[in-house]
Length: 84
Image (tube, rainbow, N blue to C red; front, side, top):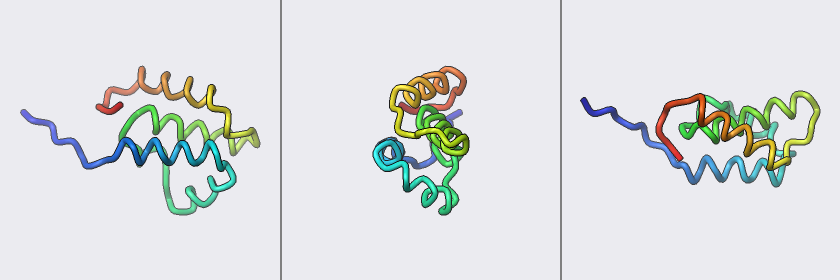
């Protein structure tokens, strides 16, 4: 049985995370469009977005690349969807 993969762009997902790391001030705009971690197909980008949102809610800086990368790697271990 062939599993169909929904259309997605790993590069676009990576780009969103990159922009939020450089410009954390636009996170509210991303959230206002309805973007959520569930909208990401690649697990590490979904986890990174969730981490950025959680840190923002706690009033912490969202541009800490090491912590987001660490969260992304943990997310890859927990999820078993395809992706990069």
